[in-house]
Image (cartoon, rainbow, N blue to C red):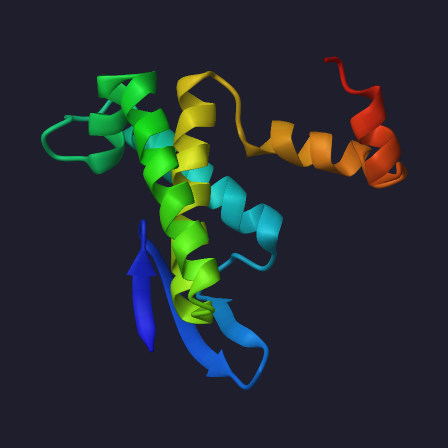
Length: 135
């Protein structure tokens, strides 16, 4: 099935027991590329007409609306996970990630900041990392 999300052309096909296989047309080869491309799309629409662009409308409306959308997408992700529907789960997580990227852009940071934080955690135990967090 060929589909388009936020201007990216994707081929989505079902794998047996493995969830979904997503191949992206064009220059996007890995997760970093996808996150950067989504961030570019968001940046390009940042100052656009809120009546013509979903991204511009959310960024123009402010953080509370973006947070509301993240809450909605998180709830839908939970429901999809509970229903054990892999295809729906992937779609809901894509929406959650997208709206999270919008929040990052609204706050003046990008996906590279999140990737840097995740990378810094590779050499630490999750249990130890949680103990070291400020309370």
